[in-house]
Amino acid sequence: MDIKKSQQDVESATDNSKDSSLGRRDFFRKTAALSVTALAGTSLLASEEAGDPAILEPTPWGTKWGDPVTKNLYGMPSKYEHNVTRRYTKLLASGNFRASIAVTPLQESSGIITPNGLFFSRCHGGVAHIDPNEHRLMITGLVEKPLVLTMKQLKRYPSVTRTHFIECPANGGQEWRGPQYNSLQFAKGFMSCAEWTGVYIKDILKDLGVKKEALWMLAEGGDSSKMGRTIPMEKVWDDAMIVWGQNGEALRPEQGYPIRLLVPGWEGNLCVKWLRRLDFASEPWYCKEETSKYTVLKPTGKAIQHFYANEVNSTVTSPSPEIDWTDLEDGDIVEIEGLAWSGMGTITGVDLSFDGGKNYVEAKLKGLVLPKCWTRWSYMHTYKKGQELFLTSRARDDAGYIQPTVDQEILTVGVEAVYHRNAVETWKVEKDGKITHVEVRSQLGRKANGELVIEGKA
Ligand SMILES: Nc1nc2c(c(=O)[nH]1)N[C@H]1C(S)=C(S)[C@@H](COP(=O)(O)O)O[C@H]1N2
Ligand SMILES: [Mo]
Image 1 (cartoon, rainbow, N blue to C red):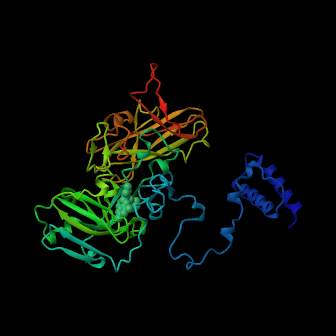
Image 2 (image 1 turned 180 degrees about the vertical axis):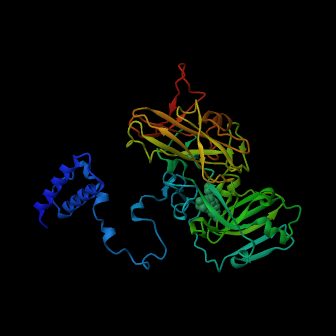
Image 3 (image 1 turned 60 degrees about the vertical axis):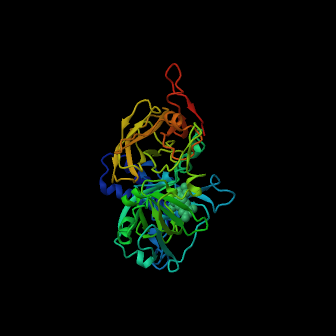
């Protein structure tokens, strides 16, 4: 290619562009000349009017064959999304990563469904890999007709599909004494939401004849942890399910393949994975997970036991420490987005504060609003460069609850509770657009001039 000639072409095109009457056809001619220059590999810089080379130049992926359809028979995300993964923390790992947790990148979530490869995974004895042909579910105890089911037999019951979140009750529990992580993923990623397919346990029980003394149901896992939890019969007769489907495919091993218990809205620990036994009795079993663990110690020294529902809660997902506003210009219009959820019902509204909870405006609920399910919310905001903000969201549900302030929650349950934290949470937008996780002590910590006391910078 004659480089000199293409340079001339560019020069004349640039000259043309000074003519404000430049027609559409001239514009295309101009851009064509520029892309020739780029291909010829000259050091000539495209003028600003030339536009973005990323749209003007031929791309390798647009000019060569792509992969054959035989290459990825089970699809994976784009390699450019390699950073979007679960992340693990030493926090709940008692010395190894088999009794551990990997948390969901909520900052990258869209809509209300967590893809299966990103669903948080909390295991007390590692991930079991169960052969479904060898696996059985035993239903026993105070029933007329005890039963052992193969997976095939179980799946013959009429199935239902429901969208619900699962949240570990320890979600946010590291932060009773103030923010620990400058990260949404680590602060709130002990939860995920999926579309589940399975059977209501009440539909199986119709056939079995439950004795009237049966007031509690034990669920036991087939993994090495032998996780056991007891669930009151009211919940079983309401909406407890055995599920085998997760977002249109089989449960992932991390989620309890081939079957798990789903106790919609109640603490994740009750959703026993790798389920192998349901046992009915007149009293709770008082397993480890409902005595020494998963109880809430109050300042009085007494503990709340059988604390089940994850109460109304919310978080701002964008901006977040991971997705900041450092690239915004003054006056840019930006969407503030978040999630709200309640294990006691349906989200009725979300309020958003820019001053750490002093004043609130109402956000808009987006998309499907379902019971015991993530609900996405949004608020359009005009960014003011250099302005500090304290973004706090506060959700409400149709059970009549609203998220407490940090002080309200600490006054009732103290700081030793660990589980079931649902006080509001605050992101500070710094002058440069960075986001910092802070805690606003709204009642105890207001100075005489009304200024809020901000604690625990991460
Ligand atoms: N059998 C069994 N079930 C289990 C667990 C376990 O370790 N073994 N972990 C529990 C805990 S503490 C939580 S929070 C949820 C997590 O579900 P997930 O791993 O699908 O996110 O599963 C619960 N069910
Ligand atoms: Mo958990």
